[in-house]
Image (cartoon, rainbow, N blue to C red):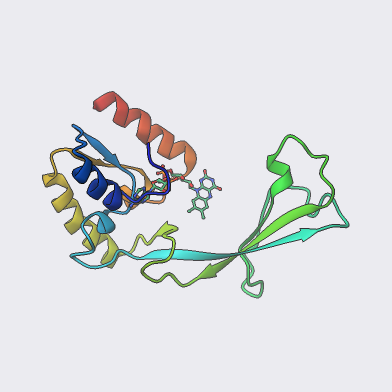
Length: 162
Ligand SMILES: Cc1cc2nc3c(=O)[nH]c(=O)nc-3n(C[C@H](O)[C@H](O)[C@H](O)COP(=O)(O)OP(=O)(O)OC[C@H]3O[C@@H](n4cnc5c(N)ncnc54)[C@H](O)[C@@H]3O)c2cc1C
């Protein structure tokens, strides 16, 4: 097992070391797999601002509060302590999430479900279907926004089929 290693680097190292495999489940972005030869798929991105607040141990009473008003620049605040069982720590840590422009090379967050990107994904999918030993899965490999429950269902169905 190799952590912090991209699939491309792993493949290169494996070729040098003579390591081989029968099947690959690739959960990265499909355009990255094909070295962006048809162009970049686009994403909606985010910027996170994290703050430690010393003088309260309960900032918003909940793990997640969404803000939909146009005049508020962030879309949600996460208060991490509400996800944890141990709530004895002093103070609290919150993260504000701001919409941000995505550029190639930055973290791909939410796939864009628009016509242009879906048409490009369909072209990549044609290439992917020709790969015999690689399966594409997950939110990046399928280029779909999938919540945790949906992705677990996809994974269970995939494991039954293969
Ligand atoms: C900002 C954000 C907020 C979300 N909030 C929620 C929420 O509140 N509730 C909810 O249910 N779901 C939420 N989701 C969705 C949830 O994160 C996904 O459903 C889940 O993570 C999908 O799992 P996955 O395995 O498909 O993808 P990921 O969790 O993205 O895992 C993909 C894995 O592949 C690895 N990888 C990618 N590219 C390469 C590469 N080239 N080489 C090697 N490894 C690679 C990554 O490092 C990662 O480990 C959110 C997603 C995002 C982006």
